[in-house]
Image (cartoon, rainbow, N blue to C red; front, side, top):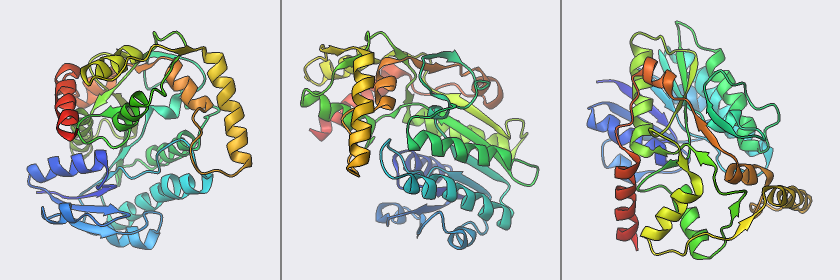
Length: 331
């Protein structure tokens, strides 16, 4: 039985990791901004605090055998200082707490956004460099955080970064609800030619990759100091996948199209306007979103297979059936 700490344990990925840890008989502590009575009822020790506070993190990580650092400021819009505080300072505080308390292993939840620039990425592996000019604060801050994590890897503290892409599944509070909301409102348009392919990651497979990473760090350690792309068996055609989901839920198909150049230009203008007006709400289009919707971004998972033993437990077909059942139960 391991003593495991999960930052961001109340979120979509974090709570799924917590559930699997509990099933395995581990003692789990969750660190988050809120209270989580549903986790406490399952025997989880819940600590509420600011992960960028080093004193708090030093105390919270006492006695831990393993840490999953999942917490992050997500989204693509908002003040830089918020992304810096949570994603960079929070990661630094997590590293400090691990070192001070002699925690041997730290698994970090990263993102492929750290390598996404202004062109399609098709079958690239982990040798691809970080994006030189990231187009949103989220990507920029995650680049800096991942660098911190991988740089501190040593025999004293083994570290690893897992890069799941477009995480989805039952209970997802972000990707799927946003797609459904915009689809039902008729606010989605195909950006570009509609043939771009992307990686997607079913939630159970994301958890599996994190646990395999932890086993490696606590075992042979040959994955330490590295980042790994993970996803489903094959990438999907983004707009076919979205329209397939909509068809099964009785939502009108997305057919209207907008050229990529136009969407990118609109995003540039809206970013300037929203920044000038200091609006905290996300613009309906940004340069980063235009690129994400129009370009391909899928990755070679060979390193995860060969070194971590990663093979998706849940196929895209099975995952979609589970997601559809969940959506119908919610309606």
